[in-house]
Image (cartoon, rainbow, N blue to C red):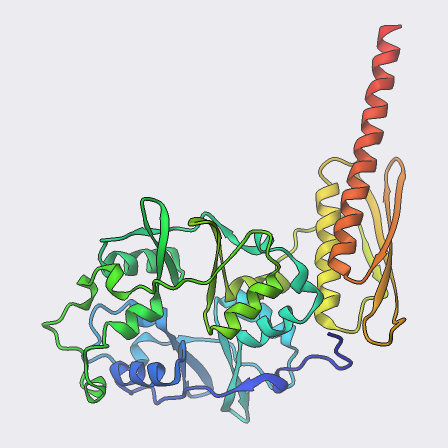
Length: 376
């Protein structure tokens, strides 16, 4: 998928739930559940505050609590901002959406699903699930109380907790399930009345709240396939498994982090010429090339300069074919390699393997020469 124009936030505006800061939190939860929203927004002066499901999870009782008591102020973003900029802010602040403001009024939100959609349709979608997943995620055993699941989520700052029996996956409990399902036995009118103090919904066992249907993928699955499944099933996670053994988890935040990852400083100048117009394909090329240089930095002589030249053509006038040339100049010698194909991330993976192989072969030749000289 090639975008001839810059991806702007205004193209992806979706409806947001906006409430008064003095709204009872129990009523806000009702609105969130009705709209299937993870967060609500409110205006206080010229600032924008948000309350997320995880913020609500902090409250042991919702009775008598107003929205303002759980507020966190968040950055607001104009409609003409770049989608990549929005992704970086969401990743930094651990948010699933940002309020879009025009003339000090919230006109909607940019949801992290927009980022997932564009990753799915870009060259980044070819990356394997194992490359972005959180490995060996924290789990909870069947029979434990929801209060323990809540405590783990708050302490570890995440929203998804796989449920296991004898280390085998049997379900998943999320912060949204806890907040929404703990109020499931209350009539809709009672959302405006708060939770009775005699009820301690966190005493429910996790299996009473969890979902037994879990979205799964293999470590070698592409994140494009993962994104497609998450969007189609309207789920905010995907468990990376082999049989019923959990190897990792992918959430919305991993997609935002993928294109906004903080890069370690590399002293050598890095040049990439001929980046694609599609900002997601361009970001994929940057990420892959910088990772290549960082990995080579560990065993090559000091890198003085790294350059990558990308040439593209469209023989069938639909897909673009790329020819990539890489030149890495170290303090002792230069490494040159080129490859071509349809997918930039795959091309850079091939170049990475080839350059590492060349460097390893040259080290082995030098080692053998030193061995010959020392034996004479």
